[in-house]
Image 1: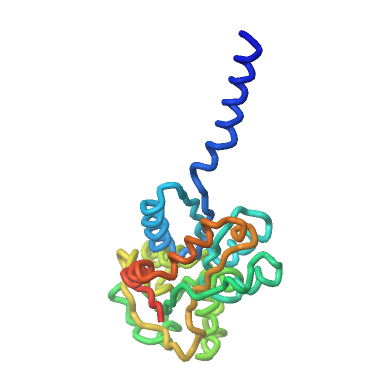
Image 2 (image 1 turned 90 degrees about the vertical axis):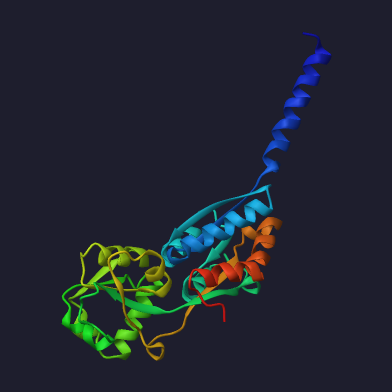
Length: 250
């Protein structure tokens, strides 16, 4: 093969090498477990409207996700189920605090089998096993523990609580009958409960409002596509999807 042909061949290979990855812009989203369905729909809708963009969605307890980001896991956008873990990443200089905004709101409920004789928070002391997200990393568990403490029930229940790795696991334990009831978000109960129902709504005055903040991470700030997607999450279309799944936007 002549030298000029080799030069042309390698030139074409270099062009392909450096241009093909640019065809698809990847956005890594780390979101609280309770946002799985709504985030999957929103990223799916956005990808259809923007064919050059693809997503990698990672779901879990907000605390676990924050620790992953701290340890270098790829994340361009973080959606937490409380401000605590967003603030944690801000102190680590991994979130630009100017980009933090509110995504949605939720409420805490207690679920159990329909025949369970529980109608208010004080009734849970009658039960033997109660699922709760681990308060150290699961915001739903932290909200629930806050309510139990304010109601003066935390010490009476300390030997009855079954810790779960995230709010979805709480619901699973209750649905399978492995516990007598569970503290979960209203949206989880409405979307996923099969064998249990909402027995009561935890009084809002007993715990901080369930707020989902969102922000672009330090890595995500380098991507214009991440900023564009964040703008989309504030749109009327995105809010309609949130409302469909039972979240509040005000």
